[in-house]
Amino acid sequence: MAEPFTIGGQNGWYHDQGHWAGYFHTYDDFKIINLDDKPRTIHVFLPRDYEYSYEFYPVIYMNDGDTAFFSGGDYYKTWNMGEILTRLYVTNQICRVIVVAICPVDRNYEYTHAPIPEGNWGGLEAYSDYVALGIKSFIDDNYRTLSTRENSMVLGASHGGLAAFYTAIKHPKKIGCVAALSPSFWVGLDSMIDPCFLDLSGDLLGSLEYSALIFAGLNTLQDPQLQPKIYLDWGLVRKGGYHNSFIEARATARGREMRDLLINKFGYRYNENLFVVEDPIGQHSEESWSGRMETILQRFFGWPVLMKQFFAEQVRS
Image (cartoon, rainbow, N blue to C red; front, side, top):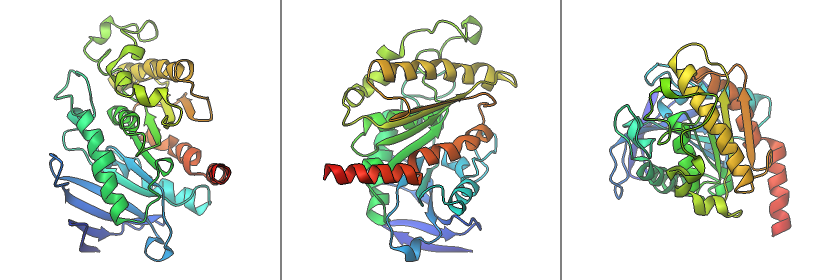
């Protein structure tokens, strides 16, 4: 059943796919008037009790929103977020959240800040502004959200993971949590090199420390008050084609470099504000990323984490 509505000047429609965890508000032509962007689709997944609970909820802004709940993208796969949230809610492992699944218009362009061999690139700075200042403002203004940085996460995988990381370090006062799965930190460093010239397990071509990515977020990463809480992961499977043999290998090499850089240069604390997972059966695929989502959500929105945050706020006040 689809029911049309208008919220905050945006035309949307309500639909329920039968997930115990919640239902959807979908905007097929979402457009922010004061930003130079093309209309796009966003899916807002609301907790089942949203209409009558009167509660306020943390928000996850999810890149590659066309694959978050539904089969889509180049490979017609999905993360199955509805099923994941249902399992976690039924077993009372995390608090209820709102998920804003943002569908790309020009994925390569929007999710990259440096040259790549396939298609357009260079739109990531504008995209990060669009998410943190445009979409987030609309969601906070029109839904019952916990709008503080501590309750706002941006999440993505591959190029979407790079985009998530970039958005968090560019807008630390808006977004304080980021999960970057198999992130493309290698873009702008290894992205224009023929794989046959790379020793995938050896030396890296150029340093992340002096890359455009780190430069973009240097003020954030150097300030303990602004540093986002970061989750990084990657898979260790190298068989099964180019995505595992090259892309996931690059994600692993650069991910390990980023982990060490965050700890040794910027003072991140392992298992406090930096979480890293190496998945021995992980591949560069929606199935693997979906398989790690429960761990991510428990890390950021599990009840022990929220209680610890609550008591810390009480002490500060």
